[in-house]
Amino acid sequence: MLSKIIRLGLTAIIFGWSVWQFIDGEIGNGIALLLPAAIVLFTYFRNERILISLYHMRKSDVAKAEKSLLRISSPQKSLIKGQLAYYYLLLGMIESQRKVGKAETLLKKALNTGLRMDQDKALAKLNLAGIALSKRRKKEAQILLTEVKRLDTKNALAEQTKYIKQQMKRI
Image (cartoon, rainbow, N blue to C red; front, top):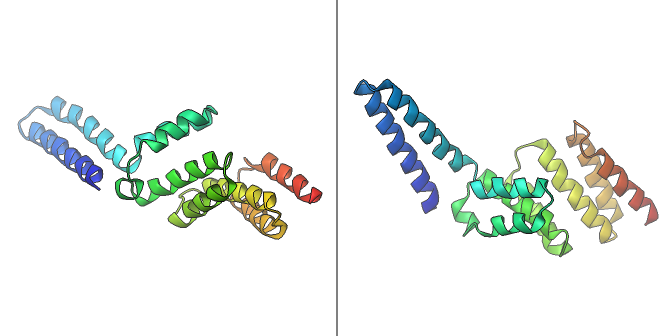
């Protein structure tokens, strides 16, 4: 909670300084101070540790991604609702390679907390379908896969969906 207040306070101070520069006639300084204010405000809505973790996940460096996520102290207090959903999503994807049960609860938390984009919801549900299939819950996996198809409008997860469907035929 304190981190959020500090970020908003710092943004207000820098913005106030920028306004003072405009009033004082220093237009260039005022414009130059708007950029740091915008950057600090951006970190309020997009946590830098989550962004770093996303970068490492895209590079397939799961250990570094997990390390950067675990550096977030008390995520329920320091992250806003949208950030918390992505925190749970990333942790769930990391845990899905180790403990399936813990990953399932984290992915469900991510969906319940509120992922913003349909593509991210589809990714979470695809992982949940894989977990359900590994626990031999074929019907639940089928329901999740139909939701993935509905949410994945760009067909980015089509190959993974086909793979899970092939695995379903074996059960």
